[in-house]
Image (cartoon, rainbow, N blue to C red):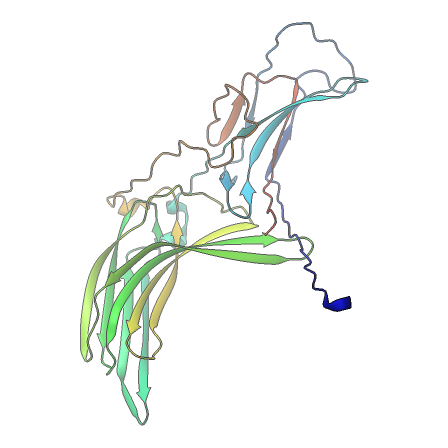
Length: 306
C-alpha cells in the first residue's frame, strides 16, 4: 500500500435453500385474458405443506421464513402484489430417532505424573437411561468419580450446551459456529484416595425448540458435558456426549414430565403479514381471504452477512 495505508476488505458469505414452492392460477392462466367485475372477490385455496419442513426460525446469522405472494397480472400495466408471512412449527418425535433411545455410558480416566512419581488413576463415569430429551424434562444422571490419585478434585460440573453452525456456499464454502450454555451446575469435590457418587437430576430448561433437521445450512446440536475440575496445573477430566432434543418425549420415559409451552408466539418476524389473517396450522396452509388472484408460496432461508 502506498504511504503505509491500511485498507479493510469485507467479504460477504451467503447461503440459501428452497424447501417448498407451490404456484396456482386461481383465475385465468394459459395466456388468456379475462375481466374481473368491479367489487370484492374471494378466491379460497389450500396447499398441503410437506411434514418434513424445517420450522420457522430467525437467528443471529440466518433464518428460515415462509411467505405467500398473490399477484394480479394486468396486461399493459404494472402487476400488483400482496405478500404475507406464515409460520411453520414442525414437531420432532424422539420415538422415531433410534439415537435418542440409546443409553449413555461413558468412562474416562487419567494418571497424574509429578517428577519421578506417578499417582493412581482418576476415573470419571457418566450414565443416563436415554439420550433424547424435551425442554422442561428432568433427566436422571448417574455420575461417579473414583479418585485413586494424589490430586484432589475441586468440583464436578454438569453442562448442557447448544451449538449453532451457519454454513455459507458463496463466494466460497465457509462456516461459523456459536455456542450457548443452557445449563451449568456444580457438584461437590472429591478428595484424594476416595470416591463419590451422585444421582443428579438434570432439568432441561424450557425454551422454544425449533426443528431444523432438514435444514442443511443452519444446523443445531446439543452436548452434555461432565467435568472433574482438578487442583493445581493439571488438565481436567472431561466427558462430552452428543444428545438429541425434540418436542415429543420418548414413550418409555413419558412419566418424566415436560413443561414445554405451546408455540403461541411466531418464531419469524411479522413484517408484511397480511392484516386480519390467522396463522395457518403447523403442517398445512388454508387461505380463505386472499386477493388478488395468483398466489405463489416460496420458502427459503438465507444466511445474512457475518
